[in-house]
View 1: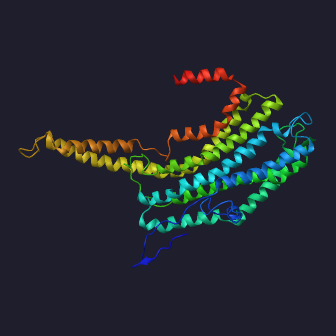
View 2 (view 1 turned 60 degrees about the vertical axis):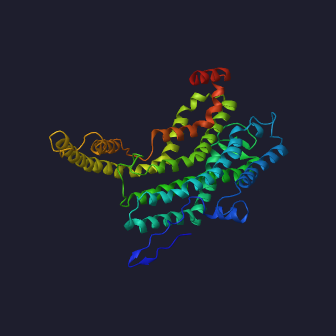
View 3 (view 1 turned 135 degrees about the vertical axis):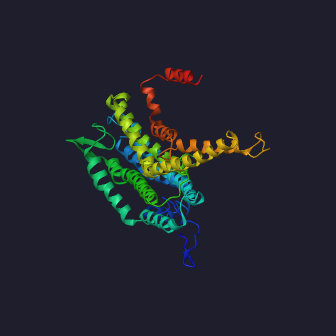
Length: 404
């Protein structure tokens, strides 16, 4: 619940920041609460995962068994052999649900960091609270989720799934004829329930990333109180990189979907893993940018803070170095003052260290290590497919050589 600001002598009394969560809101969250699939803070994670996965996957198995398409030679792609669909519904869906809890727990304390580090001046506090309130209104928007659902059924199911068949072969969910899919009974459940559920959860996450990016843009427009000598080398904004790492389950889910699609092409269409090199590179680029791209909005202000810090601390260093030179090298020290043990040398060294911190300031609040971590998380589900290219013994041998 949003805290109110009570005026005192014409000035606002600064209280705790409004509660911030990208996931505790919206119609689907309310449905989960009423269906006893979630608590007020996203408890009951296992229950949500089990129920949603079974709703999406179990009827497909039952209907495929009823039509004789679960295994065997009745169709080229039986249900139990469809790696892509199993990965979507039994791996990606749980990961998308898990991501909500991870992001919620990691992001909530983040709001406190903006204030605890003194980044938000008193005069900008009202605007900061307004940015949070605006993000929460957008998160709770019924219209937004209805539009996402309409997009799923009109575009995702009505056009892409019916016309852009991943594998142009007879399968458990239907037969492609003249570029359009003619669904089986299991295919109708897939098109009406399972795929829309998955696509809605995924699009809802992209909508949340948009809310996050919009919020950061609004914060970047405030007159932030940067400290160029902060040890994180980005004026105190380094905590934003740790928040970005909370999106790893989302990246794992997206990588799993692509790996499932590639697996089907390898096993049933004779494709080879290297043929999907561009898709893999493109996925990593898009997903890493989706998570870290919003942080680039701070680059101009970080650049300005770095230049101002170099100028101001350079002037301060010049004054101190000149006085140090005059005192200890030009005979300006008072008679009897000992050079050994003087704090002047340590102060000069500390000032030099501060100047080096400013020189080493990053223009973005993340490091290459963060980029690599997110890239690995995206590509991790593709790892098992390496066995289709490199034998397990050779792969283990190469790994041992790298380790030892």
